[in-house]
Image 1 (tube, rainbow, N blue to C red):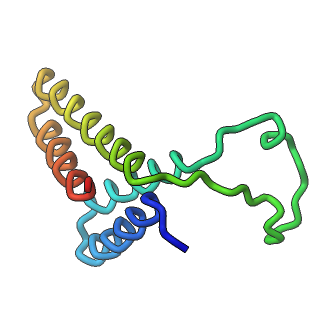
Image 2: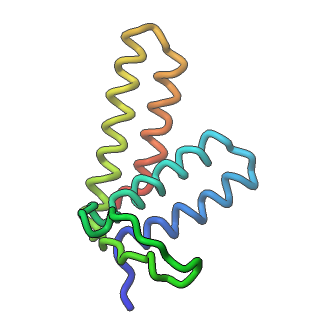
Length: 118
């Protein structure tokens, strides 16, 4: 089976997360977790009345599993570009408010996200 864009990037992110954690780079690890969560959210099936109704499921039976959406490379790229843009806009606002250190941190995060844009 051919891997989709989301699965491929999440695999790379999880590998980098292990490295960041072993190297005790807490900021980088937190950022990578955010990116994995953003991809997971993008893969979630939009809710519907059928899916959100209360149904009792047998634990570990798989009966509560819902197939996730498949993200192609363009979707993943767009999501990562939005994450970069969000951080750059926040950095500009922090700078405007005189929070230079926070602005620098946000710009550093934006640069780290750029590593994953293919």
